[in-house]
View 1: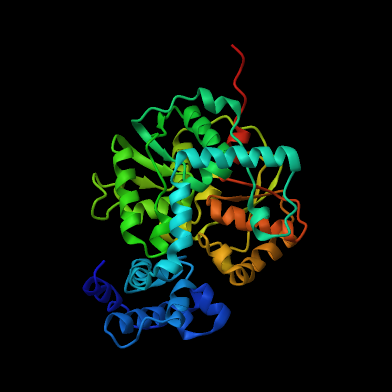
View 2: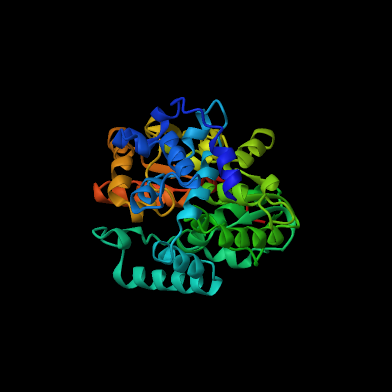
Amino acid sequence: MDAANLLADADRCVKCGLCLPHCPTYRLSRSEAESPRGRIALAQGLVQGQLPASATLATHIDNCLSCRACEAVCPAKVPYGRIADATRALLVEPGRSRATRLLSMLLDQASVRALLRASLWLSQRLLGAPSGSPRWPRLLRYRPAPQRLRAVSAPATGKVGLLVGCVGDVLERAVLADTLRVLAALGIEAAVPPDQGCCGALNQHAGLAAAASRQAARNAQAFAGCETVLALASGCGASLRDLGGAAGATPALAPKVQDLCSYLADRLETQPLPLRPLPLRVAIHSACTQTNVFGAGGAIRRLLQAIPELELVDLASDSGCCGAAGTGFLSAPEQADRLLAPKLDAAVALQPQVIVSANIGCALHLAAGLRSRGLEIELLHPVSLLARALAPRAPR
């Protein structure tokens, strides 16, 4: 985005302040520079030459979680996420973006992801579950796919295309198997195009616009033969929507992208599946991308209410963002932990047996927080819980 378009977007903000109560970083700091309208004012000052690019300005922009809660309540429909990403692009420096460039490059390679999966599997077999003291080790929660995934046909075209996601491909391979199983039970042909890649979120939110656009263009081609595209992680789906209409993403990808939980819930309403009872208390965590980008905050409840005997409760939904924010829980751990605290407090109070989240970044952050408090609560993707409830097939 050029400076003129950034200013045109920013000028739509009338600084009314209705976004302030909904902004997680403003609620923590009560600093105007940590609010949506404050960051927009900083972006305007930067573009117009009234403010120099500085470490302080960059910190305020980087602290933004890109949760998009402000967009959901903005009466002027200001595209805040687009403004934040464009401002980050103006502030990109080699030193600040080096780690993101390297991580994105590695995760975008299928061979590297396969090596990481093998390494995690081996380490867990030899060492057991990670202890949870340092932040990095406690994130390594590998859930391998069952053997049946190897026999699943994954054509390059089909009615529905599944984006696995680079981190999901490493850490939650089982979710792909569960999703394919549910879609098969609904009689829906699913494709997992082998030439798909990273959704582009890492580069997008680091201000590396050119790299993100290249990834969007690649995915647009990979899913060209699919009518609908579903991402296993809501954060990946949000990036596909944001980037899939960008220049170079031809054919257009954005109009095809739907929220996975909403898509399945709609089908279950017209085509119920035989589901066995699961007498569990399940706490729902609604990711910001699912709620604010897809407008599907109730999708997980709609999906899982089809399971008999399941008790569904909300995991402090009024507390806002959990703090994961892509890689934010690694780059700003103190802020992330403060934002996660209400969710963990709710988990203590509600005592669920399972917590479900449709975004892998949130799930990793929640899992780390649960372990830090000594809480033994299973954390699953909602589709994995649905797959668990599928009645077993009768023997032939």
